[in-house]
Image (cartoon, rainbow, N blue to C red; front, side, top):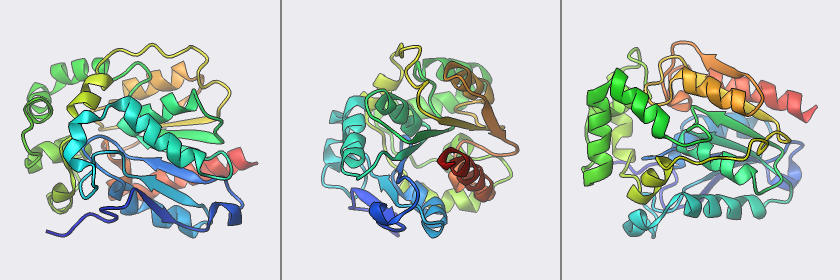
Length: 270
């Protein structure tokens, strides 16, 4: 079985050194059940080639890391602290790009650190995952059961159908999920519980930081209604990608997502 890109590295880096770039550094934060490899598929090369200093973190407990055996010891606060270490080591405030659980981490960290901007892609809402999970229970109860079985009982993520329904739109070939399946992993039960604990963020928590909120039309995990809710809470408007699923950065049309981020960053850079 081929190892995921960057297995064993805490941070995957591409592009120029931060001090040699005209842009703020980009720090990419992956979602649950995944790793920094999700960004290595397309986004790191895309943004590195455009002069951005890119840093994709493997959160604690990832496959191939020394701390993988302690996965379930880590909670969301540990993930925030690990991301903060990367941010604090940079010579200037970066842009955080967070997907799903990574978006929730980005929101929390933005309340504690000076940042250039934040990009939230199919992000867990500011209040946590409880409401989207309730919606999934109504719309696709069997999918929620499969995900809950994996989370609660430590079952391996070995169902191609569950993975495909969770992160892709139906038009994406199953061969894509089949190739990526071995790279996914269990997620920390403690972190999943943290995500389902309702969090009440301060009303003006991110109002001073530029925020781009992105979602996908066919996202089963974070449907567009929750993406729009996140954007409204943060005082902005969401952009929803037509015909895509949860993992925009892994979709066949991933470049549309990358272009949207790059165009927005050019506006923020001024």
